[in-house]
Amino acid sequence: MNDKGLFLKRYGIYPPEIFKELIAVKNKKVEDEIKELVFSILKGNKEENLIDSDMVATSFMTILDGMLFHMMNYSYEEYESKLNISWSVFWRGIQKL
Image 1 (tube, rainbow, N blue to C red):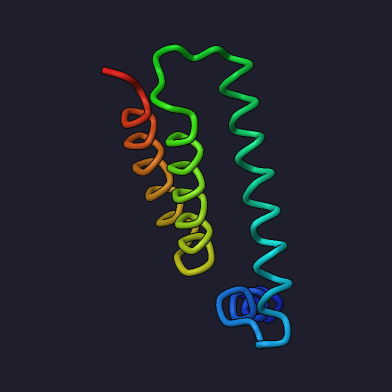
Image 2 (image 1 turned 45 degrees about the vertical axis):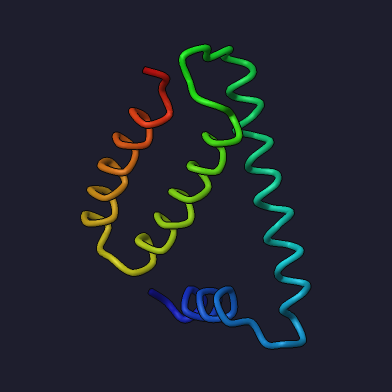
């Protein structure tokens, strides 16, 4: 990881007190926008065989968060392997039985 990546990682996880609230507000805004995107995709595709859209969006955000961590801390091959495994489990988990 380069210096900029380390800086973003450090200040994203442990921001200085003076920036904590601002970063939290910005992070919440990004999270809300991603959730809206997921909702629009689900609504547009009328996926009747999926579980509740709030659960899908929350699960997706959790995987996205974890994969960003893996992208910064593992080799690309390890990251891609973890992404494929996680996506497979996610996709099976959001479908109604």
